[in-house]
Image 1 (cartoon, rainbow, N blue to C red):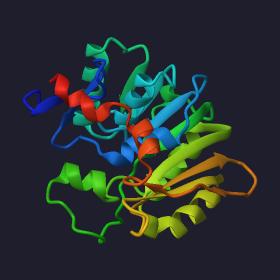
Image 2 (tube, rainbow, N blue to C red; image 1 turned 90 degrees about the vertical axis):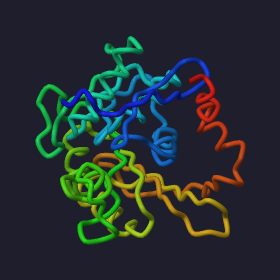
Image 3 (tube, helix red, strand yellow; image 1 turned 120 degrees about the vertical axis):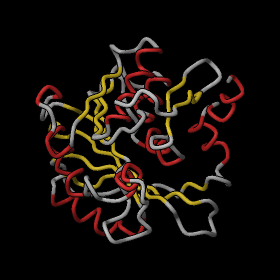
Image 4 (cartoon, rainbow, N blue to C red; image 1 turned 135 degrees about the vertical axis):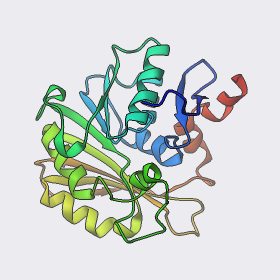
Length: 246
């Protein structure tokens, strides 16, 4: 691991919660929305696939919504950042990060025993969208090392029966997503679109599936980031104010 990478401390609230990010591994609105949509419970046994800097687990831990989180990523830099955050915040007992390809998950993570898995996956198939020349960025945005099938197969392997899988993705791939989730026995149960304004098309879809469940999906009201101010404020917490601390 190159210790000379340019990293910075990104505050998560005004109370001192933070995480380390880098040029390659930062986060955006999608991750915060997914952390809220997943509705974690303290008793959940939780794994985040393609965790990056660990934003989703760290937000859940910040809000005391889970007792412990596992994060998995193929990037050595990402795992370094997440572990550094956990160590400096003194929560190594609550946040464990593993360097691994999700196609070859380590046995120590445990199979068929987790109750919640999340993933903010690469959105673009190879050949779609403008591919970034930076290999690390391309891996995060395009299905170079991790396809939708890989994510769903890993989630099925990790979850117990009735365990939940939550993911965010691009709305234009929704038909494919729902079809493949059913094929992997992660039956879609909740769905929500996110838009900037109600008159604009959604830019994100949040989907929850339940392992080996019956069919039947609930479509939640669309979330507008500019017009559902009270709910958006609750999702973000005081994250936007946290930067004033540093």
